[in-house]
Length: 580
Image 1 (cartoon, rainbow, N blue to C red):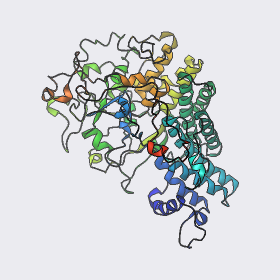
Image 2 (cartoon, rainbow, N blue to C red):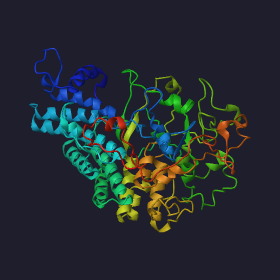
Image 3 (cartoon, helix red, strand yellow):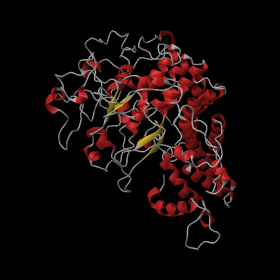
Image 4 (cartoon, rainbow, N blue to C red):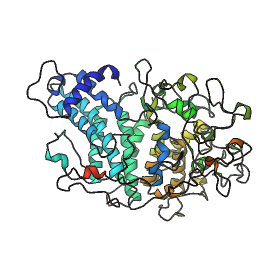
C-alpha cells in the first residue's frame, strides 16, 4: 500500500459520503464522489482501503495469523477452546472476521462504489481497465469469503442505496457466484500488470494466486460434497493459474539458512516482500505507526498450541510415516520432545519449539534456562507443543504494540501444493509434476522426494475410509494432503481444507497434546492444564463442559444471523440448512 496512513483522513470523509445517498448540491470544500474521482491518484487513494481486507497481524489481543488454525484440528486453544473447532457455535455466533466479517456486504458495496465511479470518470480506457481490475480482484476476494461461509449469497455488482429494494434480493446460487468470481479474476489477470512488482500491491500474479486458491477450493468442494455442478474445469483452472506463477523465473522458494533453518527463517522476515517466495505481502512500520502485538503473544502468552494430530503428521527423516518408520519408536520417543522430534521432517522443528531452542520468557532470560530450555507448557501453552513458526526472538519486537515485522498473503509454497493437488484430483499428476512442486518443498528442508512408485498407505490415515463420513482417497492424494498440512501449518488454511474435503468429523475427535512427562515439568503436576488420557498424552479439554461435535447436515456452512434475516421484508432471506 502506498502512503496509506497519509491518505486515510481524506478517505474517511469520502467513505462517510459513500454510505448514504449523494447530495444534489455540495460545498466546494467537501470531498465526495462528484468531485473526488478525477485522476489516477484519486482512485489509488480510494483503493488503498481494500488492502485492509487482507489478514493482518493483531493490533491488540486478537487476529494473529498463527491463531487462525484454532478453528481446526491443527491447534488447541486454551480454556474451553474455539467454539467453531468444537462445532459449539450457535445461530447467533458470527464467523471469523477476516475477509469482511459475517453477513455484511459493506466492504463489497465499497468496492462496487469504486467500480461505479470508474464508469463515470474521464480517465482513459486503459486507466479505467487498470482500476476496474483492482476493484474486481477485491470483489472476488470478498465474495469468496462469503461463499466459503454461507454458500448461496446475493451477488451485487453495483453500489445500492439503503432504500433500493434490490438490497433485499434473494440469494444467488453458489455456482453463479463462483462463475462471477472467476470472471472478475480473469478480468484482473488480463488488465493488472503481469510483472513482479513491489509485492505490497496486487498484480496479475496475485490474481493468479487467488484464482488458483479459489478454483482448488471450489473444485474439490464440488467433488467431495457430490454437487451437481462440474468440478474438473475448476481444477484445470487451478493448474493453469498455478503454472503461470511457477513459470515466472522471478519466484523461488526462500533459501536462507539451509535445510535446518530456511523454512523457519522465511516466517520471521521483517519484510517478507523482499523474499523471492512471496507473491504478496503486508508490511508494517513503526515510523508510520502501523504495528502489532504478535511477537509479544506468540513468545510470551500464546494461548494456543499445536495438536498431537498435526505433530504426528510430520514424516520421519526417511520419508515414511512415523507409524511405519524404523526411525521412530512409539513406545519411547514420545516421552521426551527432543526424542520425538529427532529424525523427523525438519519442518517439525521449524514449526514447533524443541528443547534447547532459544525461547524468551523475560527481558533478559531464556525459558527454563536451568532445565535445558524445554519448550513452555502451562495454561498459556496448553498442548505441550509450542508454536515456533512465525516467532521472532528479536527482543525489541516483544514490546507491546512495537512489532513491525510483516506477514505474507500469498506465497509460492502454497502454489506448489495447489498445483500438485489439483493435478492429482484430475488424475493427471506425473512424477515430473511432483518434481516441480512438492519435491521442491522437500528439497528446501532436505527430505526424501515423494515418488509415485514408493507411496505406502499410513495405517493411521484419516482418509482411507476408516471414518465413515469422510470420503476415502488414493494414497497419492492422502500424502499430498499430509504435505499440505505440514507445509501450511499455523497459516490458517486447515479448516478450509477440512470443509472442502468433507472431512468435518476430524473436528469431532478429542484433541490431544504431547505426552506429559512429570520429570520435565514438575511444576505442572496436578495442574488442570496437565490432565492426560490413559496413555499419558495431554488432554487439554478434559473436564470441560463443552462437547466436541460436528453435524454433517449443517456445520459445513455458518448460520445467517437471525437479526439479518429479520431485515428482509418479505422473507427473501432463508436460513442455511440445519440452522432453521
